[in-house]
Length: 138
Image (cartoon, rainbow, N blue to C red):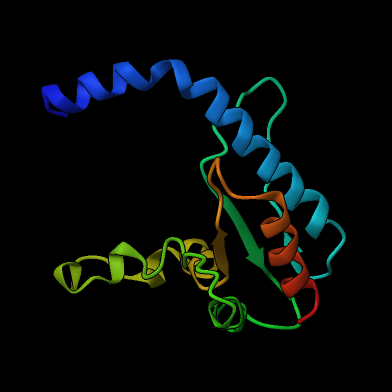
């Protein structure tokens, strides 16, 4: 971090609690909108810890569509989730011969099934409802 970035961080520090609070509402809306959908694993939060709600990863495990189909469907609606942890870093060409995803089967499993849904402070709750509706309707 350079001096300018540090100064900007300090200037914006007083906004942090408000931004986290807004993202928390987004996450809570996702949790209620996707609760009970078979084949979808939602994030959980340990009691006593305060997350920053920066991401909303969803694991598609036994859902009626696979991760890539959900990604394509959302992209068709101009909603752009991220294929988080994909590809695995140990599958990068620069690590060829040194590391293999066969050595990390759990990471490979998750990388093929997780999507991080849009999650930011200014995301409208109606948009979260729309995203949940698209996924539920697949």
